[in-house]
Length: 171
Image (cartoon, rainbow, N blue to C red; front, top):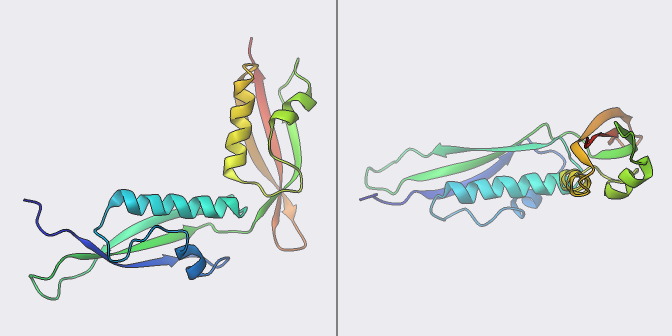
């Protein structure tokens, strides 16, 4: 017997300043009033992280915590509050330059063609991942690392990075 299910009584977001609570809540699956499911709450965490990445907040991290609500009546159903916390929200991150290192036999232009990142565009995790996958799929490289290096602030308050594409060619 597992007893009464625990219900989510409230969902809140902390640590955000770039986006309103309402805009972030719209990214989440319906949680309030549902039976508590760690998988569903974790899915919400992933959706918020994906939203931040898509908007160019490359360094933003999302975590969640569960706060059990004290029962006012012993027979009342157990409820919890879910709190999503945005850490290191920062500013949007733009690509100033893309630099390639480690290539001996492969032309830099060929490597850049496989990279979906573009100078002047927002740096997003999915594009970094896709660029790494594209380079690995060529079977030319045994190691690919794409690393952003801070390259100053922009006049609009956003941040510039130089993206270093480091490769090790197969022997």
